[in-house]
Image 1 (cartoon, rainbow, N blue to C red):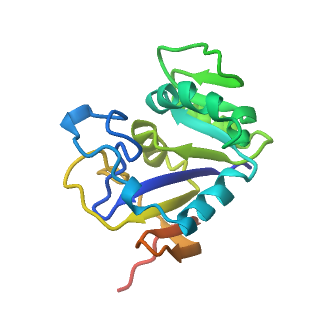
Image 2: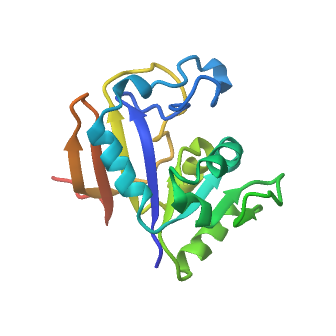
Length: 197
């Protein structure tokens, strides 16, 4: 079975909105777009490169796809894997795009992704896609979170975990702290939570 792995840049207070640029996602009046850049360092780049160069297909929300589609095809030398990966895109409005291979999912997204997980193929990596990730979490479809936790708070914005998150236990499978204070940690789902008496 294929795993769904959420790869997210996240602030200390849980915000994942618009890490890459000022105009990436300004919804809700978000004014801190591009908040990750001053923290980049060689170790973070090594971690990202490792994750970007393993076998994967992509699972993306339409807004993230709209940002990536004009950007990554022009940078095939930087990330060759993104070109050949199947891009499964959750969208009720778009049915085709020249950036291929792309498959657009509409209707019951959770059911369609659950079916894709049962198919043969590489794991499904989810980058950004703040709205889609909420659907995945709500329907218990995320198998692992590969987080890069940045040493700052943003106060408001789209959060990774909101009300409605299904209680679940995870284990750390890999972790490092970069010189600029980013905690890169991979959590894998291990089952239900245990509580004491």
